[in-house]
Length: 317
Image (cartoon, rainbow, N blue to C red; front, side, top):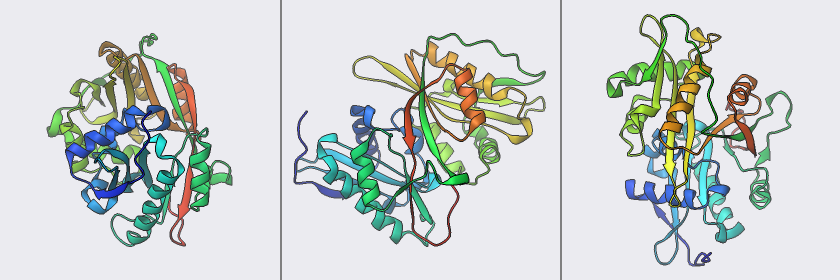
């Protein structure tokens, strides 16, 4: 592996060409990064509308060696580093994130606390987080928070699931259904973070596949559940899928819609050539965790959530 040039400099984000380079860096070292296949979704968020929320690090030859985004909708610092940059490069990223968090605190991009989600095995990164003032949330009482990255073989059979009478699963009807989707997403997660602009950008991503962007409809035509799947074929031919996001409107829970739409997504991913499918979920979200386990997903990596506060008021996640 070629070492990272010590003459690293920081530069501003330059648009879609940089998005492709950011995704390529994460994919090249996928074992080090929680977000890989689902990056087209995350890098479409409205956090990137503010250029102050994103920065890149390049070597003397202009090669990307690290990137970071203050993902305001997720309250999370997303970033990836070339592994040979070591702890020094990681600390540069965390120093920038700290400065940006303080600068943006009382703006639309700010949050009273920020989270970083390393794998439990990333001991060096975890040491850097703790030195930077982040604290692990896996054992803090009733607000404890940790995650898992799960995987399943795409060729595993999916049991047929009968939908309640009058319900159906189909692809989203493109931009004509954005507003309805946004209202569904907000209701499912109890958050206003999803916006029409974000959803429209998702639809326009070159990685977006309409046949993998599913909704469940109620008998009256209302959107009741959603599941977006992502697909990436690596240079070696290996094809990976990821579920992100999946949700069910609170008025339609308990009807088996989550299991039904996930099953349809898995069947479609297999038909599209996926070898392995991934999903990330909170360890404390027992219903979601049980659903994924029932559908054949198994824990691949434990993910620890680290938090740093920037205001006296503790924010929700």
